[in-house]
Amino acid sequence: MRSGSIWLLVLGFFALTSSAWAESTQLAIEGTLRSQAGSPVPDGDYAMAITVYDAQLAGNSLFEEDFLAVPVQYGLFALDLGAKKTKLDDSVFPGEARWIGVTVAGNPELPRQLVHDVPSALSARVAKLALDVQCSGCIGSADLAVGAVQAQHVAFSYAGSDSKGGQALSAKQADSATQADSAAKADNATYAASAGSAKVADFASSSDEAGQAKKLACTGCISAAQFDANVVADLVKGGSLAKVAQTGKYADLQGGPDLSGYGALAANNVWTGSQTLGAISLGASAQFNKNQALLFRFQNAANDPVPCDATVVGLTYYNTTANSLVICNGSGYVAFAKVGPPGSVNNPGASCKAIVDAGSNADGVYWLKPDASPAAFQAYCDMKNGGWTLVMKTSTTSPWGYSDKVWTDNDNAAGQIPLPTDNSDEISRAFYKLAATQTKACIKRYDDGSWACENFVHAATVPRDLANSGPLASSQGVNNLLTATWKSITAGGVWGAYTWHRFGWNTGTSTHGGARLGFSADNDSSDSQDSCIGFGLFAAAGNSISAGAGYFQYPWSPAPSPIKAVLEGQIWVR
Image 1: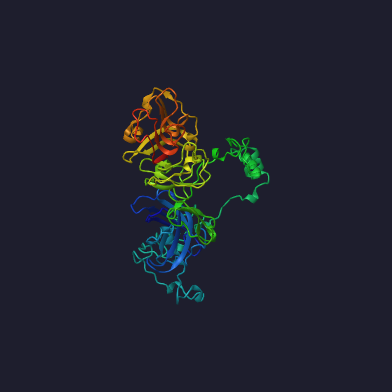
Image 2: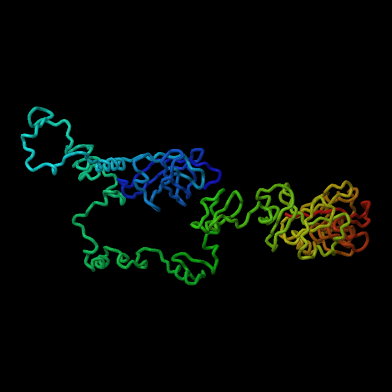
């Protein structure tokens, strides 16, 4: 079934497969399925129910038959009514008008169609009635005494003249009558049930179900019982007959596929790299994904394709209305599990980037399950800017300096969910489990409280491992590592350390300071990192501080005022 469609049915042809209805028979139906727009429906198998009625509207149901899967191609289908259950006979089609009702895949029944007689069926019915005609009150030859009627008692009137030999203009028993009321006795009747030389016998020569074909006899034919016992063997030996015709064994079928490997597979229920199925190699042991289709798709339908009862137990399909895989248990369809949208509890995303790529574009908390995580967890996602995940949030009083365990732990079982609006210290499980290739570090400016953000690009790594990677090397005399963006974080945008620079994840620690993420510098020849802007600041000597995020500077000139500050910070990854 296709969801939300209205099916239009065009019954293009009805054929009666028997020339009379006294015996059980079948009705061959061909038709066209079209959508409401008039185009053929998509190719596939469709469930159908066919009902025969005695009226176009309401009336009585005389015959019903269900078809679980009717093949439809280019909108066309064909089926045999009466082939599976009780056969059709003249109790269903007694010669009165009948209508066919069709239901497709559980939709409301389509407008009923009148059943039209085809020529062979019509003539068969007429002939049947003709054979049943009886004479009431007539005197037959048996009722007359022998010799009671003599020639002088009979008078003749000829059609063409007053004497014998005139041409009859109307002949009731003419040998070549085209259509005769007593068709059963006409030698050359065109439409006759038992005509010896009928010119039209609609399926008598080929149909197994044609009434007259059953009466045909073979003249001069030889049956199987009359063959010598060695005839088949001689034909096989002479090459005129395949050996399989004598033995009936699959192994004797010439040109058939080599199925020896399937026997081994069935016996062991194991695929190994040494096994082959004819010309098909199975590859390494149990590597099914290399030898079978990688994906299997269930039928999709908005409603149950067929009613669930004991005859279809185990039938499974994906219900697009309920977003669930359902299975028939004999009394009803039961859902396996409801599949939610990407980022939901039962459909977590691999990352915020993966969820936004799937079509979700609203900022908020989503469920994630990266490959490295044994269980799903929640995290805040910035979708409007391309799927960034907030992995850490630090406050204006954050104690998370370089030596705090949040930077070295292997997980955060508490499962905190940092939010961008909170002035708090929170760390997400994503910090320990979500591998990313980009980091966005944001710190609030001291002067106006706006955010200053810098981006870092690196190999795919979880943030926790980046924070513990080998310390960055310093660059003496390279002053362009301090960006204008991060310089603006300090009070008045002032900075005076320009000699030694390190910029990125883990500047390491020195005699005066360091940072887990950010910028560090000095203004003499010692490379002591006495000035830093970033996250996880290291307190050693001088003005250095231990804090989640902020800045400090040795009093080089010029120096910010205040010379150090703890500020709100956010770390995002993607």
